[in-house]
Length: 254
Image (cartoon, rainbow, N blue to C red):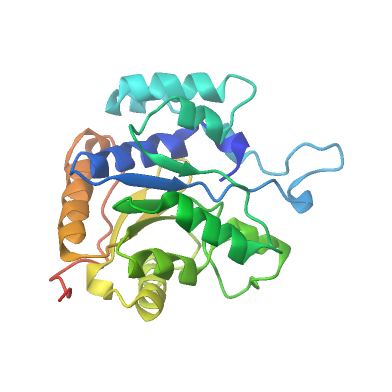
């Protein structure tokens, strides 16, 4: 996550989804995976090569949650948008936040501090700039700060916290894309692919959310929340959909 994206359509979907999880009685912690823009993302004059943060909430989609849409638009148009503005707005009541910027040199220390801050919540939402780490990016490279490491997800799951992951869609076919991520998550976390849930928000830029549940109870509640989003106003307006690739099924938890 970058401060310059605060209040855009991506936040609209993610906060709506987190609220749906919270409505199922799940307590929420949020790790923004906050990053400063890399030099390669900027032009010589200091402006950005890609204006990803320009996607405000379209009028035709504001009826999914008109109050949330209005507040997010206000933040986006304020001229000083940041994740701290999202926190202060208390969109997710009683949520716990970790907003320390990700670093390359102290990644392990950063992760340990995040775990300490976010302990106790049922679900930890991780919001990396890009998504789960890809093969083309090394853990010590400058670009690694834009990704969540699979081992970081594992650490939360192993202590009983489910993890909701933001992942920016790549250009692979949908089935292959989800299969590769779910398989890797299963390999590292031990959670069966059939228990990893997912939902897609396709407007403006395709954003996927994968949930790695730490228990059968969490799995059931998360699935109910995803289905409610898909069948409710969010799904009916095309803001979200549940992909056909089967990442959910009979619980494998013992």
